[in-house]
Image 1 (cartoon, rainbow, N blue to C red):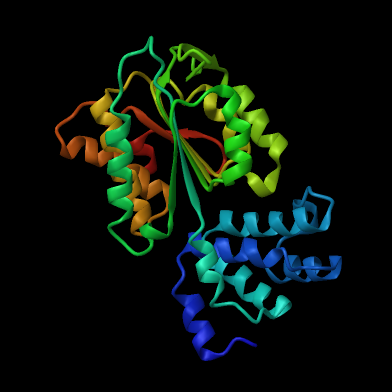
Image 2: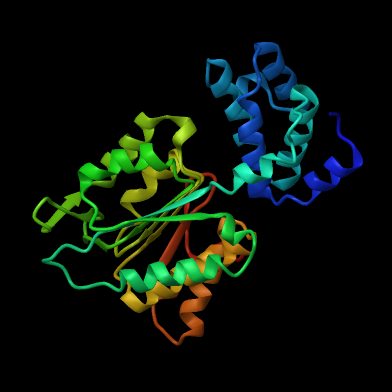
Length: 296
């Protein structure tokens, strides 16, 4: 179909998250190593920078490296992909971007303090509903989650964002439920290994661990996931709820994860609550940043 004026206008209207989503869809149509090499060369990525061996994994790696460079680079990647693949249904791919799933994993065992999880789900849903972009997210709650449920949830939904709502232990474990509803701890290292096993095509873009003490042990997730958010110490239930509200409002308006993170921290302050300095976010190098470091 070529890149006519209407198509170029459509491409120009995509934000960085949408652009990467279309890139991820189009790379699946690359059928030869020569096409992948053309893409790599056109976007200026050295062959030595790629670690994957098979064709599709190398193509995904090219897109991920372009995304790491920023919006201009990933936009250039999409332009070159369109030239190489020559898709006939490019504007129609916008509908496929609407299937991006936010998996909200909830756990509140019977022997732990009650959390306002239903209120948090309602707040996230209402914030996403504020914009057309936000309404393209599919909010999928998983209540009373057991550790054994996690593989099924990841396989069934292939979430773009995984949001854990629950308790965190002082040692950094996540607190899930057992078959009787009592607390069962999960070392985040085992969650990291689950994501690694499922493979690059199922890696979430962002994991939000909205629970106390979660960031230090979660740093290993940053090797696989673009953005990890967690809490550096205990955080009040109302503060955690407000962080979610601000964060997902940011995503609904097309803001990157870093800005959405700061909006979450700011909403805690706007509500006159403590704990706005408790959330942490990892950057693209895996470093853990405080809110004031993200603002620089």
